[in-house]
Length: 185
Image 1 (cartoon, rainbow, N blue to C red):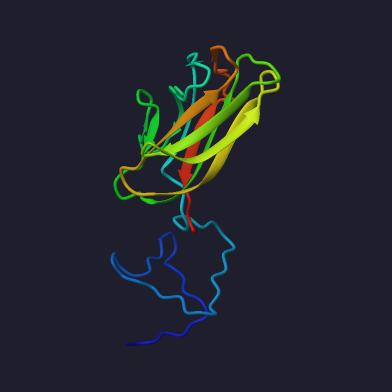
Image 2 (image 1 turned 90 degrees about the vertical axis):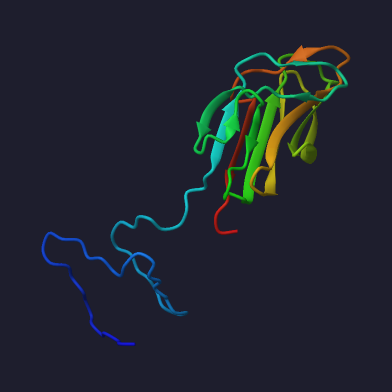
């Protein structure tokens, strides 16, 4: 092993300085500091896969029944992992890890005694849920961190107990489903 000690290494004018070759590993020892006064690229992560879907079609909810929410419009889908026909996100191969998942739905009508709930399900089982009393056109939402493996799927179900059937509000500020892979946890 050799050691080079210098205060500065500069590339030839108009060229790029390359440190090592593909497959090489550079160790930054404990206590060392990397200071950046320029632009850093290729470091960290980008929180993908990521998806964000809204509902563009009325989703009718029967009172006292759990209904899958039709999030049929993709706003973001970085890895083509959200399916607008099954309304679910499926973790791509090699992308298991911790994900932040959030879902919300708003009622298109209601009264002060309606109870509305939202549930996020992993592979068919509830992992997060939230219930609220609908104060005429309110929404309910839930978020949390889920540990997901490749091929796990996430979907959203809604519940209401008004005694009548009503629709989910299709306004994307009330009704959405989103998630992204967390980095650094």
